[in-house]
Image (tube, rainbow, N blue to C red):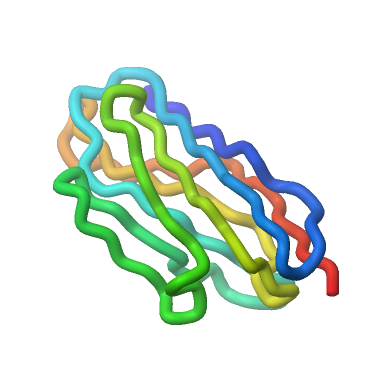
Length: 119
């Protein structure tokens, strides 16, 4: 089994910063891709940023230049540094990991961490 746990959410004023963490544990032979997704009130879940094991990253246009995704392969951990936060960044932030466990390329999701940005 693989567990994924997010942390670091909270309430912040517009223009502020937060750093989210995502830790994966369990029977993991290799973590392939990792990504952050978010779901705002009344909205569908959307991609925020992803990172491959190679270090390649991808960002949604709405967060480019403000958010930075990174990962520590040795710790099976991923981070999302969020700067200059805006009210429209409010939502649940979810971590997704693609891992080689008992079977290859299995996707797991965390329970999410809430980010609220006040204007």
